[in-house]
Length: 284
Image (cartoon, rainbow, N blue to C red; front, side):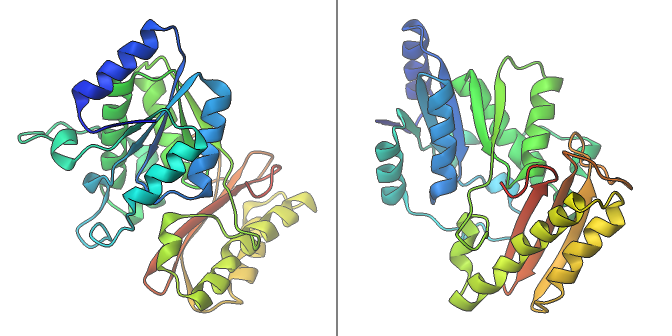
């Protein structure tokens, strides 16, 4: 594995891969790698000849009261994990490399970013799309892999690729979970042991929504009610939203069908967690 920290080095590596006729995949991350990130690498390797991974804690996607300073970081661990999983190039830029002095152009999304995560975290998706757009320009990948856990992020990136005519495939990989169903997330590191146990109520609630659908529920209200009954068993979990939405723009729906998404966000102590399920597919 080669490690790169500057634009010239990254572009030189990409040119060499293109010159050799290799298909290039990109896995963008903020580091503190876990099995969910490694599943993205695995899927990228199945679809491409070489895999580039970026590790960059992007300040643009954090609000002024959010957890940028305490976001978990462990670059030595990440290097080992990436190399052992078969990453070919690790791009680890500094903030000044990604946003040089005078940098001011941003990618501003439309209405799809205004709801759910966008409403809870104003400006978040402008930061996400800006850094992803820069990485797409730098790597020019044939495909890029993202996790389904951040489903609104993946939805907006797919829309950006369509709207800006990028010739690349966006691959969304099912969520990797703990044995109790809890979605893997770097922010799980913030949870105390008892909070980790209680956080399992999120996936249990989504499972209940899916079971209601499989039992014949066709109204969004009935599906969300099944999830809320489970969430109410853990009063310490403060639900920010529970949304039943269609999959293309994540707009609310009144009736559900296969591929309808149920998404939720909740706070447990100081930690904010998100998760979702695709009806008809189950947790993943």
